[in-house]
Image (cartoon, rainbow, N blue to C red; front, side):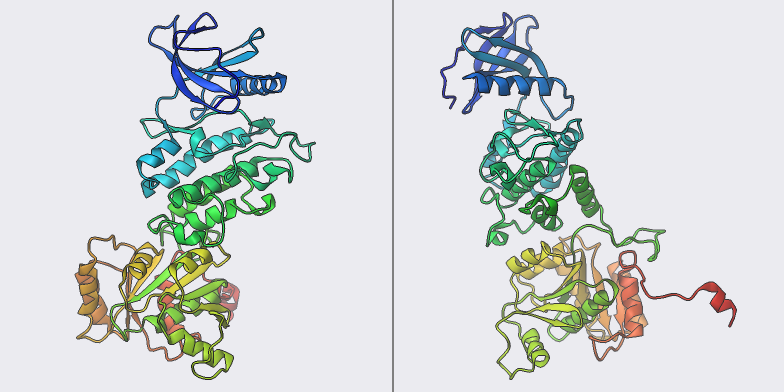
Length: 497
């Protein structure tokens, strides 16, 4: 509540033009009213009243001057500004935004707004932040939080309340006034330095984390991964993690950079027609996830996951292979061999390394979310043959879902059966791998599934080692995403043969 008593009540007239209708809200330094325009019948405005000492007056005057100079569809227009010296009040008249705050909207969904709205929401906020940050001098908002964002009936987001925004001054080492909302403000807003565009980006990360955890968290603390909603776009996690870095130089450096990252992630497609492997760029956003699911026990899911991981490590480095099953034993046995320990005496550490691939044994979904915020270029999930909710969810959300089924003639139909049982889920990204299958079996399955991404995997006795035939198949499977980094002969050398 505003500490000072208001000079306005129902029916009061401000500036000989605006009649107060009702109170919209109040804070520590101000109160906002809805007012009707006496000169433009039917037109409504928001009137912000501040009553306090000279320092607050200066802040409000600065806010008015700043907003008057701005023009953006996601910012309220200032249409009038005047002071009332006798009462000590200052008034801003601005657009009345019909709608509700994001905080109220979340409460309507009990904290869980539809997941398909989150990335568009982030892009809308980034659009206005990019506008503010590229002004001369840059304008830093400094108080991005759910109660300062209005949602219109058309699902448009508008920033309100510029009470603590400021123009960036390059000659200052830190802010004169330390303001911001705990939980959403960047560390430098508490005295560690001057706020700049990266401070607002931290607040955006806090806001996104708040939305992704149903309003439970706005800071990245131990255990937060377990509260992130499972159905959300996977690409958001490393973006949020980078936005919330403690040191500004470790975050994204501009709103435009974040916009590019989100759009690149959202538009990512395995292979576009007319683009060759050599033309594809490795400079894509975030960590890519390959999920390997076996149709049945013994179908070769773990063997295939290992082969894929080492193939990717030879091409790109920075690969993790995750055993997403709390009771699986395969990685434990492998760790014993790698570390030379006795059976049943594997290390307490669940991570070990083989030829540049980081193996994570008996891993939970929360651990996977944590790894997504790291530096891995690819994470390969060995899901085994189980189809419990957690593993099936990870398979369906993966960038590259791989189904592994027996290549034996009498078992090929197992894959078709799995596809039918999950037909309610989109399957256009799925890849089907048949170890030791004949070309005829592959042809028939492609026809039955009406799907081109069906591959026969050759005999590959040691999945840790490079095999030319296996590499050819995986080159095709990852075409358009993994550039061919193998050295090529120059044309003139070929001609001299």
